[in-house]
Image (cartoon, rainbow, N blue to C red; front, side, top):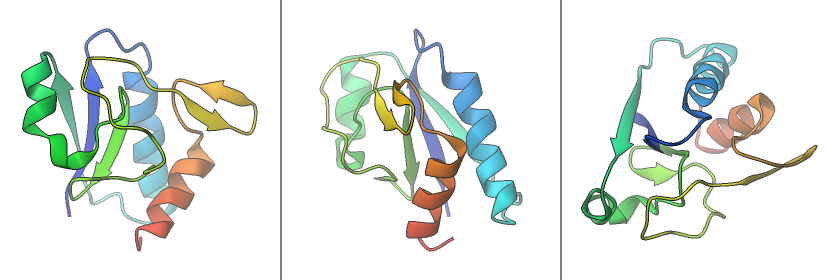
Length: 106
């Protein structure tokens, strides 16, 4: 199983998203799974992973699939917004990540 956090250099939420993702894995008893950070720097980086449905920074994938598939794929280095219970934010909540992983069979 491969979990990746796809991000761009200018994304201010990368560190917090990594913390939340690792916390979500711990909640699910899966701290044994390492999260791979993958920085996208050019448009060709995005085209190289076009099968993931990159929807902006931050995109969390499990085995190459976005765990929040409602995001629209983008072709440029852009930030992503998530609908959270408190409004739009630059990263999902811990509970949203846990639920998305549960929906993926964790």
